[in-house]
Length: 635
Image 1 (cartoon, rainbow, N blue to C red):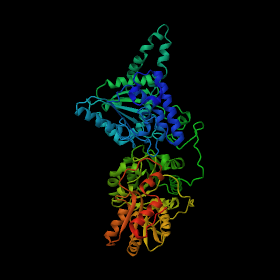
Image 2 (cartoon, rainbow, N blue to C red; image 1 turned 90 degrees about the vertical axis):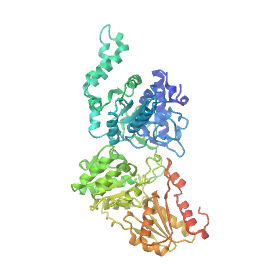
Image 3 (cartoon, rainbow, N blue to C red; image 1 turned 120 degrees about the vertical axis):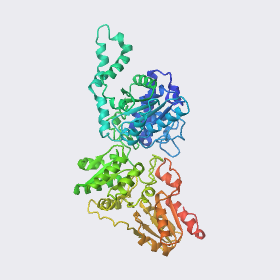
Image 4 (tube, one colour; image 1 turned 45 degrees about the vertical axis):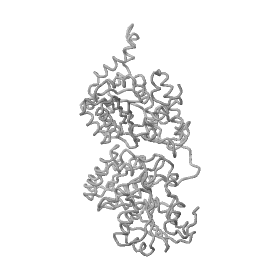
């Protein structure tokens, strides 16, 4: 059977180990070819091929449910659930999503883009099953990195208290999230993985039996059962914590041995109550380059399969925002030992790996635990340190109560640096940084700022570090800057709440925030061709707004447009409209941003075109709103 013939996972039933191994090789080949051509996540999916095939071999997927934690490890799942023919469209507009989506396949039982959710969702489904008197199996797959997330531990605590609720938790243990795992839980798992009895049983047990004259070969059919029984006796301590929490612990199991996986999963299904099967895998398995560089090949831009090297861009690009942020922060931290960079398992993504390499004593990785990261930062701030919490916009959502309760109510000087704010592209709705302006703007004591380009971001990093009277947040986008000149040092802070005028005109006031400032200037140039002169303001701050600058101009000019790359509901434009109303400046306001829709996976430029956020589209919307009698098509 060829992988392309599999449209339903139940077609795996009855295949021999040899046939399943052939399917495994085909999955890896298709995965590698697809990601090499268009980019995407690589290492996670390569590591769970046998785990997926072994688990699905023991389930009836017309009835049973598998919940995956973080969908990028579920690419093998996608390839055997009817998406082989479209897999080449992975993460492309109108193509296969990079994460799990309930609307994409009946086999995607729960959407997953953020970590640590699968056990909670799986337990909810298992409880619903029992309440309705139904009979089906529920398996929740979670990585060891995601196990550091508070939600996962809360779910384990709950499930362990329900001895009559059947739930299988599959722990995919590859010692990694994106970067190497940190903390006590990964260390404990490492003890399980490397305990001497386990190593003896894994490496020497069968070989020792085979050396017994006249006995070894005759016992071969029984070795698996004997080995498993002795393993349970030999290492009672390694699963003790899991067992004490109410789970039956099974493992560690070789995550690339199909026969052992199928046997273990089959046994696990026979146990009443919650079961945890500990599966040890290798991230990037089957592609040697990815196995050796597990961090670099977690995800990749298009690359050469033979060499593993990225395909170079046709022309040089300006530095990425995250790189400029990290470089600036390191320079400041060298001069100020109180600056502490904090990441929640995203060292490379946020650029804080540069701080780790240069000043490891001023760097903290808390694992996948954004809530803890924020309150940890609050504790550091209480003791006079300058915590810089570098967390993606979409991930900071997970720590909302901590931002309010632990930071803002106590007015502590924590500097939040929100990478990937705005439209992020191929990762889709779970990763779009759409909501940070809205969810932070309403919190008392919080200052919000966003740079128009990478040079202004350098100044805002200084501003954030220097701001000691309360919390402050800076949002910045994914990807490359504009190529404006940068300084190596000597950056001047920006006065809190002060914007700047970039262009003057009497017909229209454009107030732009962050990434929409440069497009705002371009829109003004397009409008000029239609005889309309616009003033353009770089707001810099969404809170506090520069009302001294904006309100008189709004009243004088009489027409206001706001531009932002974020949710228009409750966003920057809403804040400006509120300020106008509160100050009795009654003028028409056109808010332009991301409407009340989920932004699906696509290239950022494609998403902006769909949302009407290209400069020609914005100019046309302004003409239609304010200058109907002067309208002519914008091209």
